[in-house]
Image 1 (tube, rainbow, N blue to C red):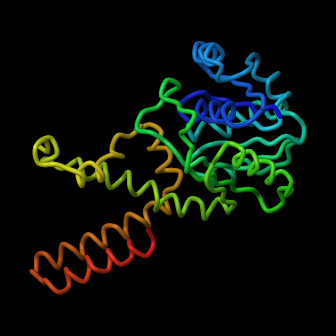
Image 2 (cartoon, helix red, strand yellow):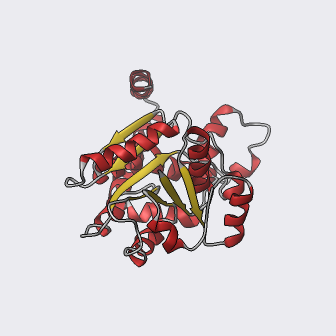
Length: 274
């Protein structure tokens, strides 16, 4: 099978490296910056490159790895170039907007996807062939997407070594990602905005490191992700603020019993869910 990777940054190049390492599929690759494509060819990360439209004609599965707002325009620009009945997918962290905008009658099948992994640093040079070890691969097909096409994409993810594959709706994906990922980045950035943050050295240990880690953020990309997933993310922010205010109220009022109950509740939930 020919798998085309469009966009050879952190995620795209890591996908290419993983496919090369764990499967026998042929990896085609293309990047907007030709020097990155040339480096990927020299490194053996991809098997072949060339004119993007010609590559699309030969690809059984195409991954589009761009910033959220660039994915749909790129696919529509090249909609007549994709191999007939092939699968076109993406790796973006939000799905509802993209899947809604990609609804239409095409000669290919679009299936939204999200390989659940990342790093604080981006770009081709930071890509890894084990980035997706122990990671989940989520795909969000339309109701009328043929089962064999969904199975083909899920099967590729399994062959690549993803620990878990999940098939769900775009809406449920975005609701869950608002909780498991986006709110954590909002919290981390809010945390390090404290005027005390620059003075943490000598006073910080694991708690500071764990909470602040994902404040290392690509502001351009995450701004798009936050805004494209506005409603679920705002609900999570409201819940977080409400819970913070419960702590604040009980601390201000020196209510030891209520404060202890809050922490015991949090500990109990964490023990139950892992």
